[in-house]
Image 1 (cartoon, rainbow, N blue to C red):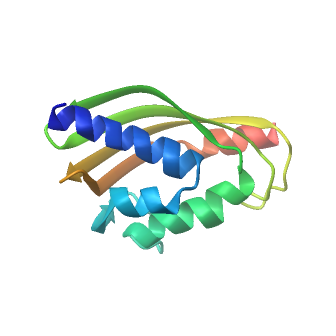
Image 2 (tube, rainbow, N blue to C red; image 1 turned 90 degrees about the horizontal axis):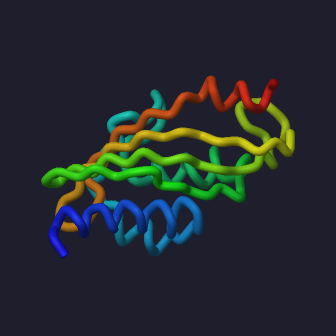
Length: 137
């Protein structure tokens, strides 16, 4: 397996084992200690602790049954770009919106730089207004 294929497999593993499954051990194996989230919101740590906080205290309490559907991955050298869709149900408070029970989809674009099989840098695009629109319409 080439390094590019291994990097794509690592991105898939992160999505399935940590994002879907909540496996902290997988997170610790995949995310480097010096990881930087280049698109962390203001006031949120850019390191691994910020990612952990985002999922465990922001996203998963509102959307506990989150499933990841990877549409496509493109890799070159140490970069993997992933286009994915989160499928979930709004079961808890999210940005001041009480649980609606609605099915929600979130289209996500990630760019991940890996080094020695670990995430070292990340960029992300997700249209939060589109998500809120699904909850309030």
